[in-house]
Length: 142
Image 1 (cartoon, rainbow, N blue to C red):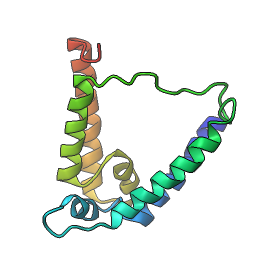
Image 2 (cartoon, rainbow, N blue to C red):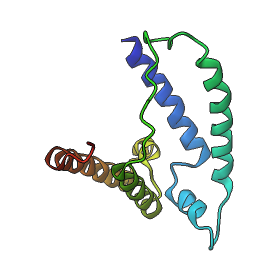
Image 3 (cartoon, helix red, strand yellow):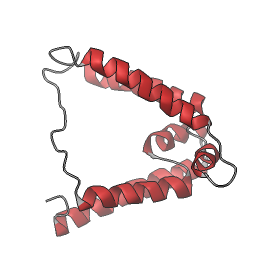
Image 4 (cartoon, helix red, strand yellow):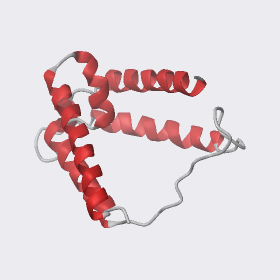
């Protein structure tokens, strides 16, 4: 129950930050990615702020023996760059550039009741299901 409540609160804060920063507006994201057209650098400041907060808080939090709501840290140990990782990054970038959404802002944008984030999230979930089936069939992760 505590983990669920914490996730709800953190998710709400994250969604609020995405909305305030403009990250839920596809035209703002596409403007940021348009380096040779009408480039909009405002999201660069969002990223710089997020990186700054992360750099400080990560170092402070990792000094603890364990997280607040768990018995141990779950830190990834895999650092190998695999073909599946590269292909996923390419697909993510193409989707982000074409739609102006990435998963977090798209889910937060569902609150707008607009059809575009709904279409994106449904397509994203469908893509995840297709990948899961392909992964089982082709063993892509191994």
